[in-house]
Length: 173
Image: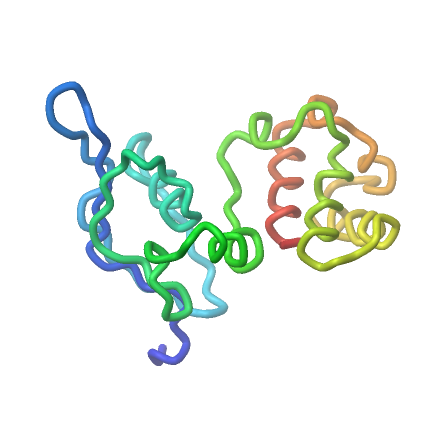
């Protein structure tokens, strides 16, 4: 692919966390290039750095993490963004589907409301239109009877369905 189709570039990304004595390296020297329209997945053993890489892309690493290297997204260095600039990127340009949907979804809020909030926040939709788009999107995600399931709480859905709700939230952004 040509360099004009580059969406993100990761160069020598190294992330470590402090221990009582020394540091624990969670990631050592990751290099990758993501192109527009490309489907990309991180696959690896537990503890191999998949989640830490995702947190770095989302600006969600804790302040005590030591980060070296760079992540350029659409030519912009993500590590140089201010909190205000992150608000314009996170959820709008970059989304992450967390591993455990039961902890990522609000257990006290219906899943339809959680997806609809993304449409309202990022697309400026009113509640009725956002709920309609939510039903449509949940159907596209393979959730049966989405017009009924929007009124379910996360604990009323299977793990696979909760994962699809999270994917829908990422797509809505």
